[in-house]
Length: 126
Image (cartoon, rainbow, N blue to C red; front, side, top):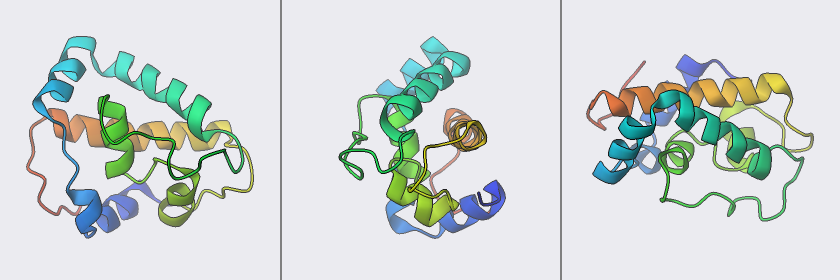
């Protein structure tokens, strides 16, 4: 796994990743449910969609909208095993370990907290 600060610095230089931001409905849902519940949803999505080695439909298993976590996954390149390998150094050839899941949740939490705070979507070095 890569250092989260390094990953966020690289993500900030990606025009594709920078374009993701929470819409008003997603932000309202996050505020209504609270971050702990949203992260519980994220944990469930990780287990169901990403945890297996070489999951079926890899690269297409995460919708682009419909839940704040989906947006966060695309913004942070935690949306598929291919992106996890490329951006985070997590091999797609093995199931995710508990440490991998914990790391992914930390990445998602950091992005969601930043979005919740209303920061701009300009490139940032964190």
